[in-house]
Length: 111
Image 1 (cartoon, rainbow, N blue to C red):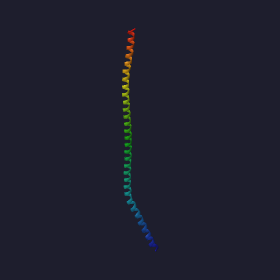
Image 2 (image 1 turned 180 degrees about the vertical axis):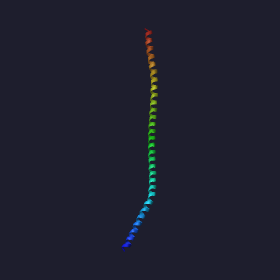
Image 3 (image 1 turned 90 degrees about the vertical axis):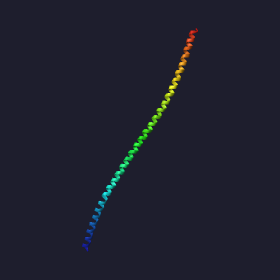
C-alpha cells in the first residue's frame, strides 16, 4: 500500500510540476501582450498629456496675444484723442497768441 501511495505521490508531483510549467509558458505570452498593451497605453497617455500641455500653452499664448492686441487698440485710441486735443490746443494757443499780439500792436499804434 505504501508503494502505491508513493507512486501516486510521485505521479501527482509530476502532474503538478507539468501543470506549473504549462501555466508559466501560457502566461508568458499574455504577460508580454499585457506589457505591450500597457506600453501602448502609456504611450497614448504620454501623447495625450503632451497634446493637452501644447493646447494649454497655445490657449495661454492666444489669450495673452488677444489681451496685448486689445491694450494696443486702447492705447491707439488714446493717442488719437491726445492728438486731437493737441491740435485743438495749438489752434487755441494760436488764436490767443494772435489776439494778444493784435492787442499789443493795436495799443502801440494808437498811443
